Image 1: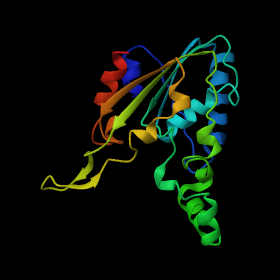
Image 2 (image 1 turned 120 degrees about the horizontal axis):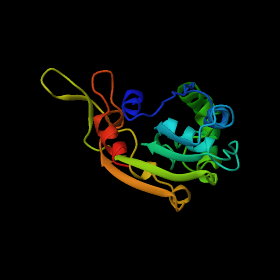
Image 3 (image 1 turned 90 degrees about the horizontal axis):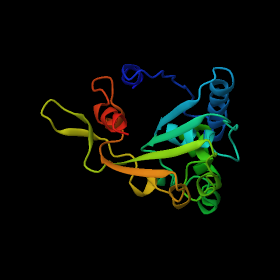
Length: 214
């Protein structure tokens, strides 16, 4: 993606984070980086692109109530396959009945598997239900939702699928509060969760084509 942006005369920076950290903490770290780009590097047009959990982090960094104000910079948010509605596979994490019946073992298992973000990803938790409002500096939230059904991530030599690429449903990628923002434009794309951003073997041609037209 960085090479694709460079070919269009744009400069790209990659933000690295620990995917086991709290999403809110990573969002705050990204907000600080964006603040530096605006206040020190004097950038006036910024596109923040995030895939999957990265999409949650990207939006969190640009929320009025949480992020640092990006005064003087037109900011475009692009999220891809981001589970704004919460992750159904983690629905039991933090659930009081499950926690009581398992004497806390369920919550411990959730933390071991997901890391410190385990309290922020289940449907219904405050992080999901209170996503906040995007800053005024954000001119657009281009939301790419992937229909990942019947997708395949790995095939054997005979061409049979041995690992699917269906991670988040369409419903998991939608949220009434997030989607109600007038700046949101959604594009539904038929693609696998990893397929849309490419891999070591395949470049993200579909995503590059989408972004080049927007």
